[in-house]
Image (cartoon, rainbow, N blue to C red):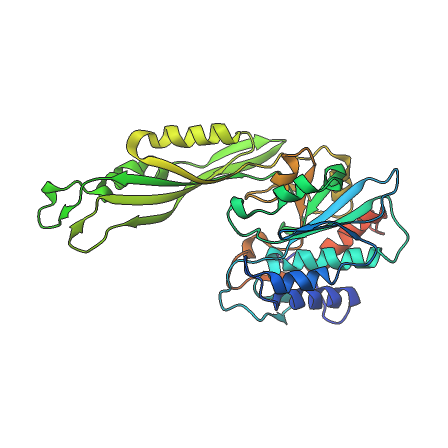
Length: 371
């Protein structure tokens, strides 16, 4: 952040993108409560795009296909994490503030405004499809995109899918895989006045979690990009009363694994690390996304104004695409450091940068500065 410049009232495009983003921010859309935002964004889709798939919180709109035009998908999720006293939003100091502004109401606003503008212009080199979906902020079993891939034929024809996730105006290639697991440590309950007659599960957990807590981040270079693999304890539950030695302690761990591992090898690594110290229950496993950097369309996106290529240090739905043989990258106006924060915001100039970069890319035009 900080590299974008915006002057209020100077750019009609800037004002339009800011107002659209604020409009979306002000519609409550926590995951599982998406009906209002869903109906609103679907009402913004231009008539030239046809609903090739519409079911179970995923809506895929495709134009009439031309024989030699590659298909490019602009994709965005309209749900958010729970509010943190940050709705309604506001426009202030060159930014749109509020829930989801960065992740990813700003990206949805850019995608919607762009397809609306291009729908009334002469077609460029690509056929442009729009994918809008919900339930992105939930565990993988709630993901609506596998059903989309099973029910749509056109999605498999895409030459490139661009997910407008927060990337600070850069292309983020690939993504980390993500395992969630519960580690259960069992002992024997007893009176806290006579702990020698019990077997404290918390003490077992302290010893058993040591390899997890001491785990050092691992740098993994994939496709020329360096991903950082990390393992963290995110929850801990134990105890039923202040005077009872607990018989059970349960820790939840989050393993963000690099794209050079398969899901099976990542699970094996975690199991070997924990060993027989605990019972392991996998509660979620989202495979990593393939690192797509050699695709000529990705190179064209960078040439159109994206601020370089970096690894995606998180999980995103690019993995849904690359796992099925469809090249995909992340590129959006949002700020990674602002996602999911109470003081979430997106700079208006970042909205303009993303819009103009995508417009140059999709229309095959270059700016006066040579981009």
